[in-house]
Length: 159
View 1: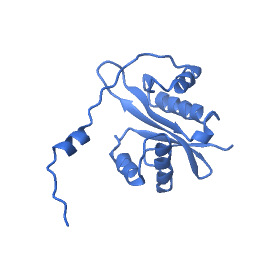
View 2: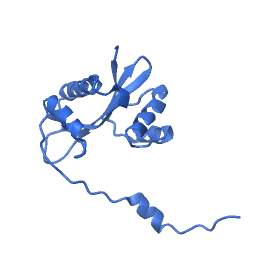
View 3: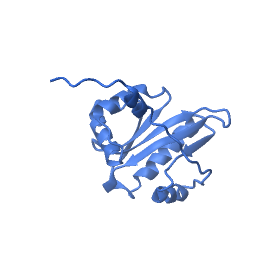
View 4: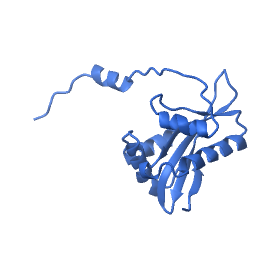
């Protein structure tokens, strides 16, 4: 297996369909158009690490620099996705290693990972890489888009 990790802010157009497909496979249905729009809206410091084998994207990690008043500048793995059929083959490990290298080279104080409480296999993966559970949080979200749609005036149907 020859795996290449590519560090980029804007992946080549040829990879956009594959990245959208990866998101969909991971349970976050994404069109190529939506992905392109989201990529263009990312903060300047964000990076994508693409795990590419030949011309096929088999995984990625989205990295961000977090600024807050409590901690020193922190590198954050916003998401990491590996194709289902390629998991447990060292790809996630290589993506995390590349994220750590990027964070160190960028002078960040720490690298932060988030994972859903029900993703126990991901918890075991991070612990095996030497990470420790630092906090347990509950996330509260309000669907503002749904609120906007429900408050919008109804449009008469055209015949």
